[in-house]
Image (tube, rainbow, N blue to C red; front, side, top):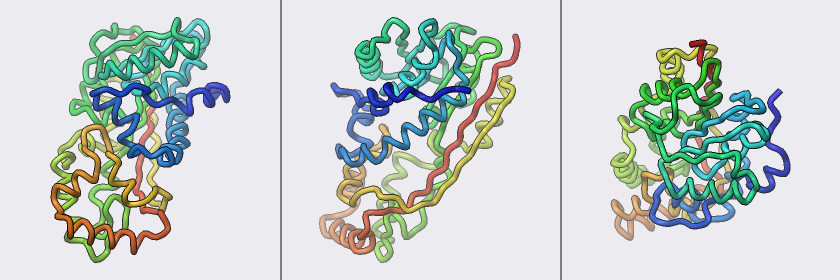
Length: 312
């Protein structure tokens, strides 16, 4: 049985610390601030779900002592730091990311935890994973990475290439098609009944950043299965989860400070770009009147895929 990240490691990493020095790198800036809108309470609400996603990826990877694990798109180290507990003293974890700033953060974090000697850091990205040798790792993990990559077929081929025969793949991705588009009477989960016309203009503006052809929306769980099989993975298993729930997510002002992903500005900037001052007041008034309990309707679907590279 694959054990979960130790209680000590979980306390140390909370489940993992946000980048402490944030420069101009949009990826690091979003992980540290943008996704939470700079709100510590919003961060605290999200951390348990992030820890659950991490544990799902690690359990599916079936990591063994002595393994070499490649964490693709390591970000702030959520999965990679957790993998260090599982590979043991004789294993290694390769932290890879497109962001040098995030790699620097992971270097500092693993050094602080006393594990730098079992880590490598490679600036690379899907779809090619340049700099990672063919058949050089036992496990590949990713979490919410393919949503940023247009060439998903090439990405699966690259992950297959770097795995040794018998190596394992464990990936976790949101399936954004499930919640898109929102119903006309909802905007980012908020009930906006009576202000649908204003919300429609905001949604149109958002589509300038994320539309139907975006890598975030151009696939679903069936595509992941087909892509894995097409490049030669075997023993493929996919778990799909979809929920529609009312969740405590904070107030309208906090939502406006958040950016849904690193490629999109804070939502307040999108609203300000298409609504004048009076229209913004009207929209905010409707939102406050209809959403008095601090809860919004969330439509979330995720897919966790595991697979094995067959013998050479």
